[in-house]
Length: 332
Ligand SMILES: Cc1cc2nc3c(=O)[nH]c(=O)nc-3n(C[C@H](O)[C@H](O)[C@H](O)COP(=O)(O)O)c2cc1C
Image (tube, rainbow, N blue to C red; front, side, top):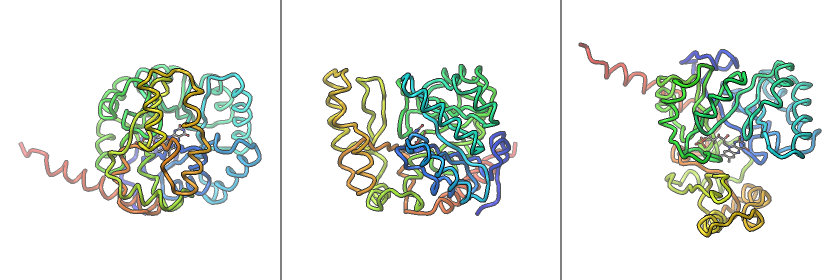
């Protein structure tokens, strides 16, 4: 494991060695095993609560992660749904987080306003993820502990504005003064160094981590990602205004056709976007069907590696980038 290179407000807040957050990956992709590997390698990971709908199975994941990390703090990803029936489940998840003394949450989706008081009461740090700086401003006013801004390159949900990570990384530090992480397309140490230089306190990685040995997804899929040149992602579900960056497979092409045809009715999308297809693809390695969150940063994945080996590579590259900056400094 590499020595710490950077001390930022986020490394301090979370007590982590490197300013690297690994975003929650559903459904159930980021589980206790993976998150523990991230935490033990010196970053912060998030178990996706929605991946474990049974409350006791969710609790068991938290306990397993705590045991695997010898009590170091770890995180949970909470999806904030706008739908009323999801509110009870969310409240129950928050109660379990408090009981299990989880260190932090990555919230995404809707505003975290409704769960903030309970999370704060339990002493849980809240890092809220948004796809545009305009949302970062409003969530900072709510009093979250940190904000994560992801750009259009990100695997998953890049939002409707399509603003690049490069622009967000430069804009967000001017717009918010709370601790800040930037994600979307990040997979190298030079990007980490550049993002910190632009004013952020950490990066967030998702797609780059999909080849991690500790993830349960099928080896054939990881091998496909290793071979990928990063050009295989596409943003679909634009017709529903639920922009989703995924692998451009058969399901994505069907969804893109619905978008192009002006479909607005979810029932027409359902056969192509069902979660069961996604889970089956990850389990079998057959990636032709299902919405498989995927961003161009998979191009940085040259091998199936442990999380620690990925972090070592990232930190060595960050070191090289810092030296290059030193070398580039004009003597005059
Ligand atoms: C396979 C996969 C699944 C994801 N699932 C979720 C999720 O359930 N909830 C969430 O907030 N973000 C999810 N994301 C987004 C990541 O947490 C993160 O924001 C994103 O991957 C960062 O961009 P990058 O992929 O370019 O690194 C997922 C991303 C991937 C690649």
